[in-house]
Structures are given as structure tokens and as C-alpha cells.
Length: 82
Image (cartoon, one colour):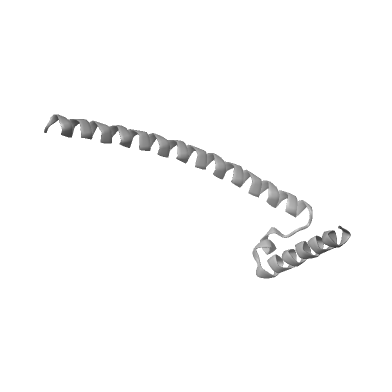
């Protein structure tokens, strides 16, 4: 192995170490985000139950359409006021 090959191998090892470190950082950040989302989802679920909203119905097409209609009516009302 020549000096140039050794130098190139060292550069590649350094890049690999850097990429692995970055991947570890990204994994850590992703785990933090997931933990926050799980907390928010659990809290949202609890609050919806307290308000009498069935969380299971939120994922249906009909619920999405009703929400979209309600949002559109709210936007239209606000535009008319302006």
C-alpha cells in the first residue's frame, strides 16, 4: 500500500466517523421529536375525551370533510367581515 493509499484510507475513515457521529445526533434528535409527539398525542386524546369528542372518529373521511367545511365557512365569514 502506497502513502497515497494510506492517506486516502485515513480520509475515508475520518469521513466515516464524522457521518456516524452525525447519524447518532440525528437519531437522538428524532427520538426527542418522537417522544414529544407521543406526549402531545396522548394529551390531545385525553383532552378530546374530556370534551366529549370521540378520538377514533377523527380519522374518518366524513370527519375530515366536515372539518374542511367548518374551516371554509369560518374563512368565508371572516372575508365577508373585511
